[in-house]
Length: 445
Image 1 (cartoon, one colour):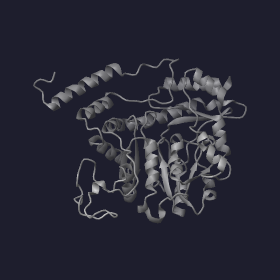
Image 2 (image 1 turned 90 degrees about the vertical axis):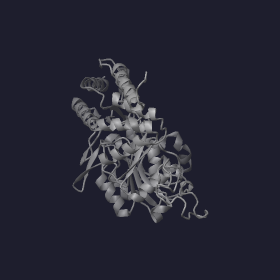
Image 3 (image 1 turned 60 degrees about the vertical axis):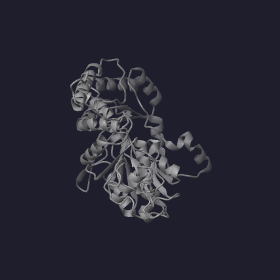
Image 4 (image 1 turned 180 degrees about the vertical axis):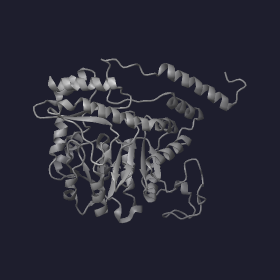
């Protein structure tokens, strides 16, 4: 097959076949009413598949040239100095939190028993790392129809043990970054933005529009298939702070003190000439550990898919906004029965989903069952109220390990009355219109 061809020519032939294969066998079929509409799905073409095979042909199984390219291009897109690719959004949150426990941060490091202000209406892995480390989450309520933290409760949540605020931008709708950032600056607290459901969202702060995830000290992203873009499994941690970046990289890469990339020995020129801890002088720096870290890296094949996705990403964001706006306009005539989502002031969301809260007298379960039975996939707002889940049974019983400030009445209402449907960029206008029709039928049945 490859007679009289060099390696580059052979590779180009293979990628050409992959291109043809994808176009023939991976074309999405035309939607027709009655087809199931998922809340999320991959949107891709032959470019992703060609990148994936191109990376596989190199058989470089760990982070490599595609990872370097992705980190560089995501940083340029977001306007941040440092990006670290990891193997999931949950790992990104773990990496971000653990970086804040580093002794390199001095008195600002998070220690066991310190408190982290957050919310219970969301996904558990925003706060799981803090609990596992031995920090104390302090839960405050949220607001409807923004579904984000109630910033009027921040001062009440503060104590002499508070070290950070770590919260997500709910389904792409930015939380009130002006208020939260001002609170953190006032009290010298870290701000971690869980940006896993909001990549591409923007917020105007101090007269400047910035991407969410770049306004706090650290931002995180997920590239799991349902998210704004995908590389299969994958995530990223990003910051503008050089010291935090050093901590992030160390915790991601086994806790190593050395910053030289894997596979590139002595790039710094100081591999054998320094003293660390109580080790012998000149101990190999590649095997010096300044933190108790993990291996959270992704593969180059994942990053290869991510590079192709990133090229399409601006169009993904625009389509999400279009789908959200079309669905909201179509549901405007049932606002007596349901509460429709509203973007946070000063924001331009990159919507992950469309949240709906039923009003008194309407049963969410009945609405959701009708919508699902008519081919539209739904989701609750993740945990609803995280502290009601079995993972909190022991902590609830002892009353230890977390605090609640005020009540969580709105969080409980979301747990009972809220659901959401998708607006992913693969949705057509016909799909959006069918969803709207079905939701209205469900509410009025």
